[in-house]
Length: 261
Image (cartoon, rainbow, N blue to C red; front, side, top):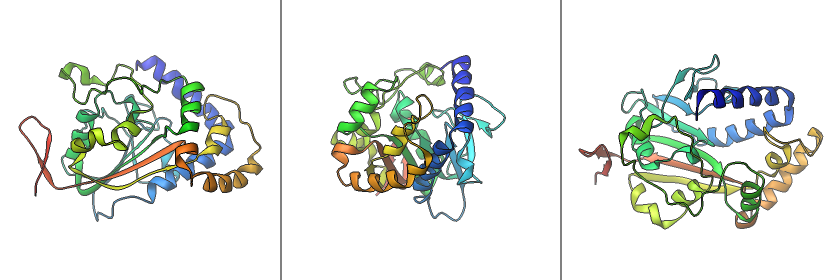
């Protein structure tokens, strides 16, 4: 993604954030869901990748906010494929709506593994591709689902790891973490939880790009409805939470992970 496109999107989102109180409440709920799964490591950093407008500090005030481009509310610039954090210095790495922009998930996951402490956690929140999710993200969202595209696990060339080119495939988290095809690639991660839930209020809020379809006073009622619909995730889930914990292992000579016994 080029700088101008990124900045235009960020500035537009910040304006929507200021004008939509219900969106702020919904995002606080998302961040609380992620915060419930933080590692219990006694030391180590908590870092968010792709912080966008930097709203996570409402729930996690000590979280280090990062993004591909600098802004006054961002703590530091980071590329997911080449993080500047020291090895085994991070206790928690959080990604909201970032994983589906990682064209080479194997390279990114190896880098996440490097910076996390043993027992550190990777906490990912992504679109969920249920029947409703297919309708919402496939028909009403500008980014592609990418369900039929081949996932390139590792880049064929380090020249592709600048992170500057735009890539999106909203279905990648579901394909990577919920299907057996990539299970062997993830053996150095312990799955703490992988769950799907119906974030209907977010859909009806219009997010950052569409008009809000309900008054703020209705939000508590919608949250009760979400709890019921989440019992049928195949039909109604629109959000996918993935929490992985780093197992002890070593990077081989190619910089890729091998699990120790």
